[in-house]
Image (cartoon, rainbow, N blue to C red; front, side, top):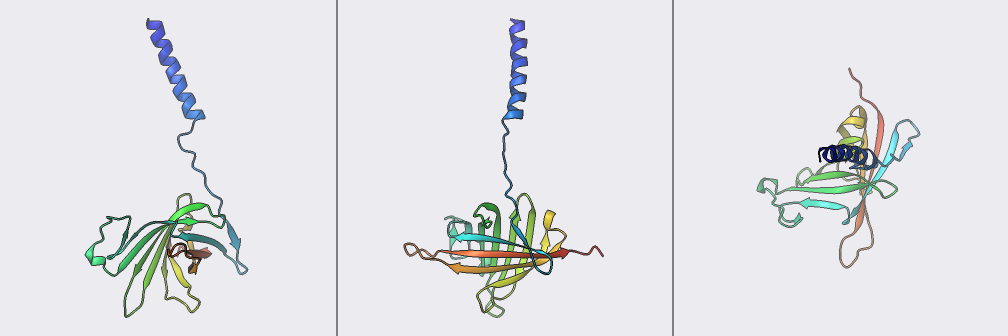
Length: 184
């Protein structure tokens, strides 16, 4: 009986080690970055968000997705959205949050935070909408891969064919990373 018990323990340990080695718990794939070299230096990278498919959550004082999301009264002029971020190959590569504060005197203030799990995060504050409907913002901060980078982020909304009265479109984001931050 004792020999059977010892044999069972040894086979159990060998089976557990084999499972850990040959059956990984998480097989997290990292999508390759699709960047282009800019003519005067730096790199550009394009992302997009399909509306409404890529909206994860949305909140404001009047509406909230998912239903039941409570919105504080103090943030009555604020809207926050969380989206899936896709690369040019339409693969989901991260998440982004867009916060809009409506101010009648100064216009809308918009801030983006893009998080790419294998690369880091980027924070950009957007300026007023331009004549062509796009916005440009300056990268204010970043983590990991983006911690030493300067640049800008451009946002543009493109309307697509509405389906059954539902608003459909695409938010296109393009980053332009120029150089490393100076340590001095």
